[in-house]
Image (tube, rainbow, N blue to C red; front, top):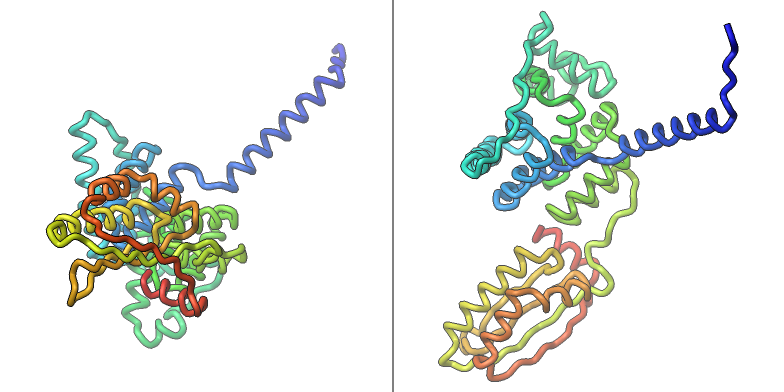
Length: 352
């Protein structure tokens, strides 16, 4: 048989193509894809009960290719971490979203149904085996500590969470750990459970780079303090809660008496819109003097100068500025600075 000699440049081209393909695949595995991002956002917003933003992310999740069954299973799993009230509220919100999309002619993927349980073990043993797979650590019966003190809690954990819920294969273990990590990252006071699930998540193949992205999504959709808790656990730099060019201002406004009620109505709407719509507006807190109601005071806090400049260009602020111009008798803007930086951070932790 005649030997075929390939030119060296052909072999080099094939080798480079293979390396580039492998690098692209490795890079893809390091970052969250669109569906994983949606799972994180949906889980975090459900955990804190933010139904308004949740509906937006539910729509985006369906647009990203998540099936109805996958999102339903996400919301069902979350009851084990943030309780039935928030899980059921989220499911009701999802029902509304699906019906609204259906009315608009959008055909969403229903997705696969759960497959049969392929095990003869009882529910406790199935859950115990699942937990061993996730933790890579032998699980005794009962669990030491809380399991001995409260055996029913140990049974519920193994039989229901890690058997009934995790045995449902609509979501795989990695997706379920993303759900859990996102929810626990958004919630206060659950650091020990979050640390455990970060370890389990890594055992399912979730990378530190992906966890860093989860933290970034938590900062954007929940708050920076909660995101920093996750960042500390994966040893990446935290983001200061208070930035160096943060703006704190006291607006002292004297309103003409005949316009007071109208002014207060417009100010209330502007302040509400600013806080809800603008991420960089930390606070716009309007008040008036009890003994002299026409003397209005507003505490304004902006994350940084860029946030303040962006605020000045928003439609709600421009409307407020033009509509109330004739109502203001006097206006003073007093820039402030904090005396106790450390305690100020603690105040924001309480507010968040």
